[in-house]
Length: 242
Image 1 (cartoon, helix red, strand yellow):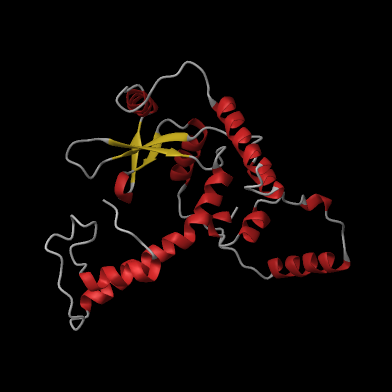
Image 2: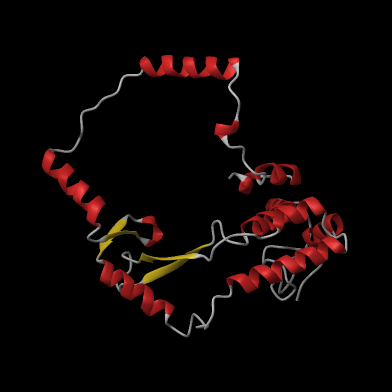
């Protein structure tokens, strides 16, 4: 799905709509003509079927695909890949997951309880008319999974280490997270505009405003001066946070 690229609720609804099964689409004159045109174009394509691997290399690659004698893992900072045995990879992952400093061990799988709690909150919001019935239908959770855990190896460090990664793609909160991201998008864009205004005002040497003696204490960046603060608060109704 491309809902992470949506910029409106209409787009959100469209991209979360149940997809049509291609096998259920009836044959039409236009679709048949399109297929024939596609096949004719495929006939004109030329393929280079020469392998860049010799017989021994291809045999070794085929053996790896079938037997998976070791793991190929990503490296932190995107510096390449690493090779590690399954035993060592599992030990690194289990040792990290069993560390009580980072994780709390629980006796039961909380997935069903969490889904029930979230669905109850969503139904309550719909009952109070804070969200529409159509939005409720999109956000209600009927399936999903827990996050997937993996580790990246830190080969760029003198001392070997790992970076744990938990991916929540297609998790029970996917649609809800996409919606929240969509709702916060205008505020993010506004924050970028304000930051740019502050930078531009700072570069204007003719503003004639005195800087704060201690701007960090006032909750503003050190380059912000009185004139810029008045402009920001006056234009966008932003207030200082202490």
